[in-house]
Image (cartoon, rainbow, N blue to C red):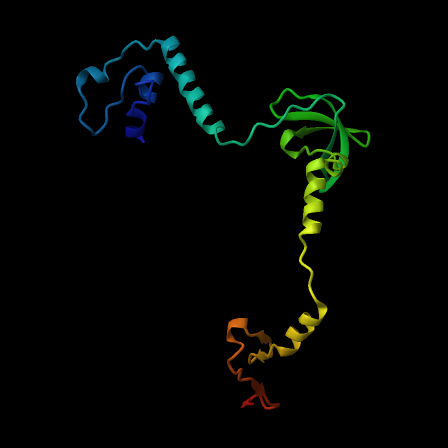
Length: 192
């Protein structure tokens, strides 16, 4: 712990003990005499370097914190998750904290984070992109014959395990014979 407190911080080039006491602590590691003497620490310089260090940490932390979401306007209708259900509400105003809004739902005013706010379902239904997608999926649905499905079901042999669970044989093994094992009332296996 002593060595940790004597280790200089990146960018500030002073250790925590130098910032606190003004000198390094004497430890079992060999240290030169000038490092053990008190020195003047320029507080303004240290604060500047410390703030710069915090800003770089904030930049790299926020780099992967998520995509930027659009700003919501006052009186905009939104869907929020309230008591594990989506309920409709209106944005009253932006909150002081980032990505948060004050939202009114069913007469109650709440503070909601931007991540929980969704667009209303009516806007999604009227969106031309979703309409085009629905039409495309309806057109591309494969038509299946009921006769072929019935034939497949009747052809597929099933095997059962010792516990009685039926096992469906993969299509690639259709030409092979399936040996079923049955269990009699005494619990002994009988080959069929």
